[in-house]
Structures are given as structure tokens and as C-alpha cells.
Length: 160
Image 1: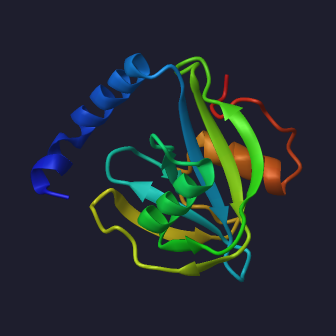
Image 2: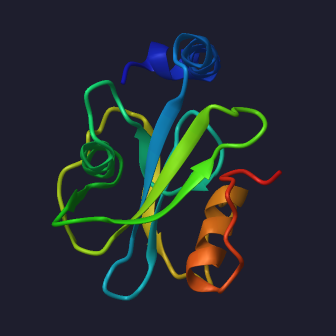
């Protein structure tokens, strides 16, 4: 990613998201939960928004959710999905984006692959569930608590 784009990203991303809200009736995103052999969870930190998140992104026109998940996991996290992913849940984004939904998948089998290296991801890493990095997003933490700590499931990605 060029230095100019990186410099403009904090302005461009909100503009594109606003445009998407008006140009699309509904948007759909995917996120993937991948664990390593030690049971640590894979998280990424983007260059354009603060916090740590599950790898993922938008489902593009003509893509299936599984195809989008495989693409995003490879591009952002260097994870090639090996076999079927398991749908964990379907979440409404929340009041800020009422027509946006997120599909969360567990990726039980994967192998390393090259990332896109396009400047979108600042860091990626595997973290023990009891030693998550500072700045894990509230939504990511909530999904981890639901999946691994017995927290009651929510219908919403973001807290209401």
C-alpha cells in the first residue's frame, strides 16, 4: 500500500463505509476464528483502525461467505483454510449499522500461506485466551467469551 494511501486511510475508510451504507441494501461481513496447536487465537491489528480483531472482511459481489472467509483469512492472516469452516453465529452489527451483518466462522483446519502484504495489517499473532493483547475490540472479546468462557450468546456483534 502506498504511503499516500496509508496517510489518507483514516479519511477514506469512513467515506467508503458511508457510501456502502447508501449504495447497498445490506452488507455482509465474515470473520474467522483460528487456533494454533497450543490453543491460542489468531488476531490481527489493522493500520486504519485501533484494536485487535478476528481476521475478516466484506463479502464481495458474486462471492459466497465461505469464499470470502478463505480470501480474507489468507490476505490478512496468512491462513489458508483447509476444508470446511463451521458457522458459529450470525450477528447484526448493531444500531450504528442496522443493515450490516457479520458471520463468524470457526476455522478448524488451516495451514500457513503468504499474506497479501498490502499494508492493511500492522500486526498479526496468536494469543493465549488468558493473555490477550491490550486493545482487543469489545466485539472480539465478547465472541471469545461466548465461544470459550460460557458467556450467553448475543444476536449483536457490537454491544447495544
